[in-house]
Length: 148
Image (cartoon, rainbow, N blue to C red; front, side, top):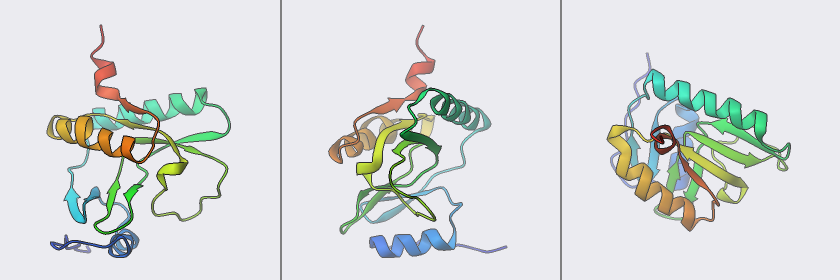
């Protein structure tokens, strides 16, 4: 078993990419150069994300694709921010092989399933960050599920 130590200093985007290559399965995000660790999502959360991804793939035009768990670069300069929306809709035009994170210019929509421990982060902070980098649409899946 490999132990990964969470850095406790401000990281550069290069530091972040090096961590990603070491442990691509972690549930971490980068906020203003600091690592933010999130718990693994619940089974219900994962099922909703899977179903939304499948639905989007079946209904979106051919020039975009829906992918769960993609890292999106919000700010590459120091201190960097990298977020991990639950589902990301990307343009297909650019080749994508072994990409650690995507540029927000390639993102058409992000979807977040808001969890009890991340309400403010998902509904305020991330939405603001996504808007600041020009991502045109943010979907709050949890809010959709509570509609009558």
